[in-house]
Length: 350
Ligand code: ADE
Ligand code: ZN
Image (cartoon, rainbow, N blue to C red; front, side, top):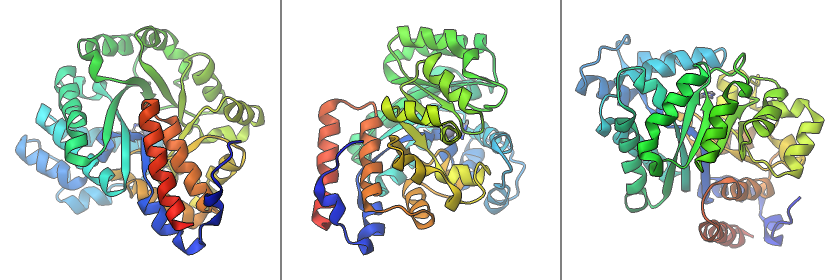
């Protein structure tokens, strides 16, 4: 376990909610298509002349009731049908970055899935160029940095993932990493062993969703077969003591998404969430919003609801923010600068 600066142990409890809001942090697990708010879906539907099967913004929002991952993915996919132009992708990303800035996010790594959009007849280039322009503008417009992680859709075939990778290669320099998302159960990491090996040879950073609904075995194979550097979700590791030990010893970060887990019925309540147990076990856990427009909150809402439900302290808050920088793919000097800002804030409260 890491030793933390001594001032984090001297924070008055009444400061916790203000600290959660104000502390600098990174967000490492959010799907940019999952940040499309109903209002933006309606605005884009109008400008792109797409008919929506909902009468109003409220009717669409009312449909956001899910029993599991698949029931969410169906409606998430329907929302993406309004995205047509490079400007749409730029506007969607900027709307998220503005929200992230308000939550004191200094750096975000955004997931996107080109296969969803190429499946609707768009080119990968339109998607990547629009999103990348938003990332390039992020320091000036939003006072933060952002980079892109292209996720393969695991319900599609290995051949389709290879095709997706090839389509992205002309814009290789716009993409930091490769991930794996969509319907987990029945689509184990092994299905993508060869395409991840190719992505690794090309120098991409690697992550994968594993252990959201799927078994701990999927987390083992994300690590040992896909050779990922971070595991997205990973909460099912709590059922496998040897895996918990491996994650802690090798300092493999987990990008945990509490409100997502609640809304997709992975846990019946936040009070039963494993985040506190994971931190106590020395796991490099982080808090993230996943699909904030669908799950009831952006990053700070995830922090505040989770801290209200679990026995988490200012020490845990510091650890989570620090983990977010440790687990990110930023450079060492950027990481040190962000941790220095985090330390300065906590010290001012001690
Ligand atoms: N795509 C968007 N959100 C996802 C999630 N929570 N799990 C898997 N794939 C996703
Ligand atoms: Zn996700």
